[in-house]
Length: 246
Image 1 (cartoon, rainbow, N blue to C red):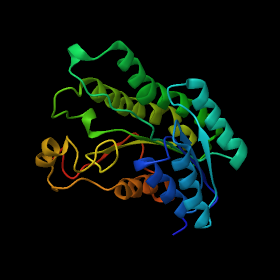
Image 2: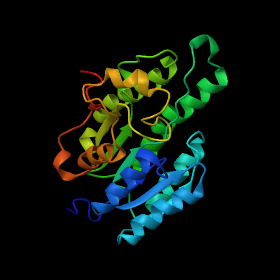
Image 3: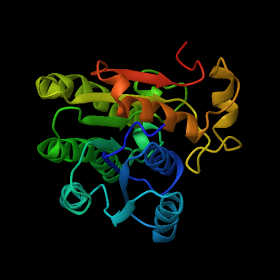
């Protein structure tokens, strides 16, 4: 179903994992898609090729989300090159896990710059280009609400900040017909947190559905929030977590 025909989407951190799945899904639903990447151009080019081979339109831009100017430029370049901007998916993120007495200020600043500041910068700039029906969606985490392991305090704080920002921004942009939501995945099988990785033994027992999620499952929720059927959903933090928070 081409529910996003004529729409343009920007997915930050869209070269791999959840971001790549989101980019491909939005393209399959009819949107022209821009993605950003900070490294690994080959993977970004592969996402673009996959979209184009299916008849879609896509571009990739190098932009380190820790660099506010680069984030702003990527938003503006998307609107300039693809003609408009309707959907922003703030997907780029990092996870630094360490006990608080070992957490360096450098790591703290980098994590906040990418997980929080970049979300603010991208949303601020994207809102300048969006009109009625615009969508801003941020990939948060269930760790905004529950951190069942040692060393996740700062990461959890960054994702809680995103959820709070979403609620306030929904009020700011609601009068313009722009919705703002956060998607909070639980454990998802990615390079960052593989289903057979070191965290699996801790995380699997916390789930009602005893498996990791798939990137395509997260992409499906983002696609729904991007489409016309989600026009009355805003300011929400929607968990897709296999029962992690149940």
